[in-house]
Image 1 (tube, rainbow, N blue to C red):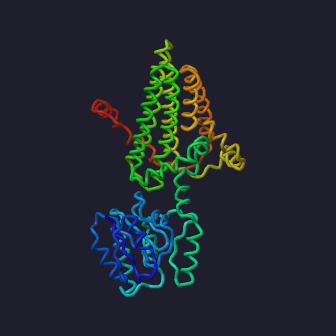
Image 2: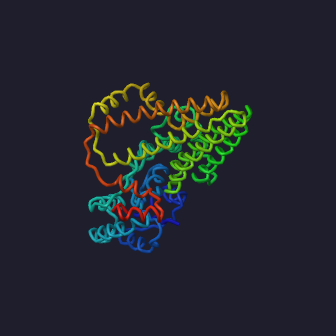
Image 3: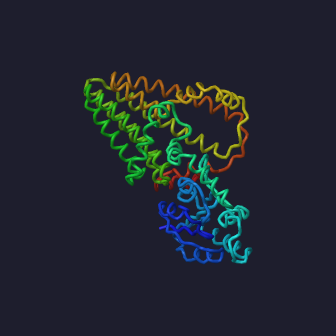
Length: 420
């Protein structure tokens, strides 16, 4: 269990202890920096620890964002600082310097957690500071300021902000207007029942495989059921990411499963459609294979472009300038997001065409749409790349090398060529 150390004198009527316990923290109280340092040393090194000012006033979700996100070794919001086990050494050093500088006596009027966070920043240690938006997180210095902070907390709906932040700020048209308005509530329902994003991701995969099985029957009823189940699978696919953001359950395994299962679901569905068509006497396996190859190439290009430009400086090319100008015209933003045929639009098209037409028509439309999307994105990337000025690093090469799964034969052949 992680430990939270409340620094300073407890404030009558404060809910901070209860809020920290609701986030899973074991709460301890320290009256001064010296006692804080002592309690910090008593916490096992393999546990997360947090320093929180006892005067803290703010939304519970602000605390959640600052103290429970598993992605960052060190994170802070006003009045609170947390460290994962791999950030504990830096926290301990900064705490020791703060205690030495302050003589280990009473906590100064400003927040001890804020001073330690500032000290970490001064020494060059990265401290993540989440964007709280309209959420309140403050350490009032006097009763009047405390009352004003409490009024500010009451004026903002913590849960509404949390639900909104669970949804991607930039997403496709179909996802934004037809899925996210209700999938966010499904994500909250899952969170309140202790479900994990990986469980929802797996449920999405199973649903898509059942959809592929329905399509493989080759009957009109099977095609209609397949289309409906494919949409349900996509709803769950959106829900897993929203659940991760809502409950801050991020993991490397989850990101890998999400990306891998998306491809497995889509390609399994293509196979199901081809099987269903074959039952009706129409051989569309060539079209299904073409769709798989085209989508695979698109994903490889997307990955390589993003990795190659990860360290690039801001693009000042005419293409980028035109894109910026178009961003000010609302309808063009959605049009450009739809033309690339993202997964939401793509699966919606496949589902509708499966239910209403034939597998052959579905694959024709899919191939045409994906080819147009590939041409559009490739042209834009080529134009941007020709004029981009950037300092290149070996990050892309290392990222691609990390993905390689070379066996003994490939490694043996690479050695004489000097590429091993």
